[in-house]
Amino acid sequence: MSYAQIRSEGTDASVRKVTAQTLVEKKYRGLPITALTAYDYPTARFVDQAGIDMILVGDSLAMTVLGHKDTLSLTMDEMLHHARAARRAVHRAFFVVDMPYGSYHISSAETLGNAISLVKEAGAEAVKIEGGQRRAALVEDLTAAEIPVVGHIGLTPQSLLRMGGYRVQGRSTPEVEGLIADAIALEGAGAVALVLEGIPRELAEHLTATIQIPTIGIGAGPGCDGQILVFHDLFRLTFGDPAKFVRCFGDAGALLRDGLEQFRQQVMARSFPSDSESYHMPREAALALEETNLSADLAS
Image 1 (cartoon, rainbow, N blue to C red):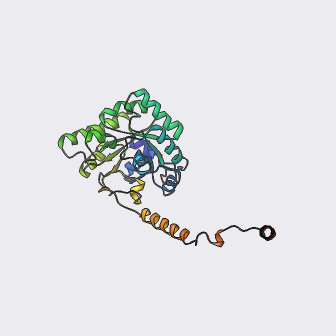
Image 2: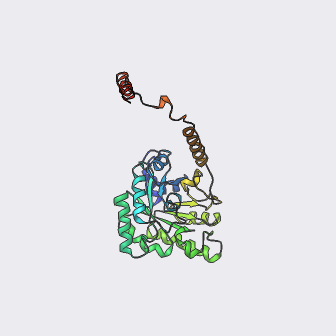
Image 3: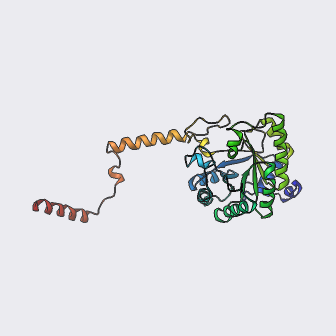
């Protein structure tokens, strides 16, 4: 779809349902795109009501919610379970679901089946897959099946074993050339947006200017069309040191720790629950209970 077509619509992105087309319109108008992960109903509801443009049920839930050391262990069943929960809360945001490792690596037929499951069973409005030129054929297949695809290049966590760890990509000339080719190939294959992770800001700015689909950055500097963070990183709900690109916008972890300690102390001191936090019997029933207790005492 051309920018001219989008411009002629003149719709108000602040009040309508956010779609892939909305994101392209925001790129054209120079309006930043906001995106966050969410993995369950309450989190997704908070994020959606905050007016965030895109919600991603990311495979990062393997680490943030399920306690795995990386994303590779996540299954389709687990992704479907969490995506269904999050979807029930989303009314405005563009709802994207990650395809887990192994769900699109075997065959086109299996990829299509898994993607259709995410759309039909979990309400995904787009699926996200990692990888560049080597995924272009899959993106074409999914697009032909009417399934929008968000691409993901740069530091791709599902490529952890091949990359030898979480390392910034695009620092050498061959890597730069490869990432440029990746972005162009994914756009040509029909991707509706592109996540750029863990690459130098200069390269991210170049890619953003080169392709016409929106770029969503995470650890890619301020020059992308939008930014995404993991919800748990945003509020210090993780247990390790944050990455360089993470900024904390609220310390929910400290709030939870303080509240848990207060709960423990007040239960131990028998100050919780109080009388006002307890239910009471009607006067007649209370008197009858007292008489029952008195009779029992006399009998003993």
